[in-house]
Length: 229
Length: 363
Image (cartoon, rainbow over all chains, first blue to last red):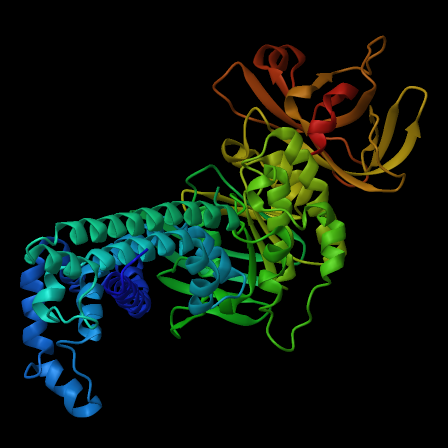
């Protein structure tokens, strides 16, 4: 049904998106918590930086990543010298680009959901003998679960669709960084590639719809499970 | 047991409170905005006093001078909030054991089954908080607080969000709790009937300050506190024991120091202690022993004090006890007071309608 090339692009897209979301989950929750529950100098700045990928042209962001994580960039050189990891021309680079682009969506969903958690429940837990960390793990986090789920799935879809930052930063290497959108773009560059492009577009649409529907369903189930509705 | 002496600023409002609460139930009473909840939050460590000292059974929870300020989780004071604050993502059983699991090593745990039994929680254990009624939620919240083995239980208007029948349903549980678990309770309320029924001591707060503290009946007998303890609801508190049940007329006889009082049937065993509140508006006065009246309860006594009031009525404090003083309040019109010449020292007969002290007067 699918051609080997399509399967390659699809599985690469899934791999890149999964890694991107998995690696940004914990930092995302931590930053959402900082923004939702703490007051500190520079909070507005952090908020701005987190949201930057939403408003910046993806190509510009890809370029910033290239400057920082390229072979000669400050972080890229360090990663290469110490761990032998290179980002450019690698699926890791694609995952990084996708993660950065999707991060604001993740943080936003988690933060909104965390802000909605009744803080009086947290104080009640303290009076029952729970230290702040335990309160976070047993009260705040479980009650934020629907928001985390929504954030994760939104970020996942965003990762699947990432194009500009990826092609600028990680380039368009078949089997390594050529995810669905990049494969689609490549198909369009070839004369007579419209049929292939259409197929790839349909795969992308199907994937997005499946994820969105699953997200709605799971969020509802989860809310029910934790007794919120 | 609990010693408090603190000052605090809450917004543009000063709180200055010094009091001592002994074992039993201590009620913190005052109009809304008197600073009761802030004070209780300071006991629990949820708000910070600016200076002062809080100790429980000799252990310092807060000391402004020494810079001691224990975190809420280190204070081990149970807190039952007005809005039960049950954890929605846990079952009733999960809520109940939340604090119990956190009881520090070396401190005796509270018997889970005993609490479940006492508060009749067995049928609710598997349910989620959102499926419970208001009264059930408060029962679970009380159980949850008790199971954390607190040194002291703080209850902030635990019944304020409930309607009268629910309130009446929970009150016996709280009485039972004190008896069974021998726990001291600081009970915040602005409902004097609740306090009379439950509390041993009463602390009256007004505008951030403690204006009076003492035994519940003493405070209720004080005329100078009348603007705070309530006008329409004003009344004397009698500590009685159930002495006799008359099944034919469905009446109950309560005995107290001033004599006997007949009430509509009270469903309690003979010998049970019962504190009741006789509202001033339900007591009338006569100069001679009344005859040919339908009133069941008549007490001979002497006028001690006549209140001052701008309105058409006055409150009269009467002693009907012998040999010890037992106080009763009567509210009469100024005209009657003048015509009957009700002045301190005057011998009078106080009449209480049996129906006046009904179940609602009991709690």
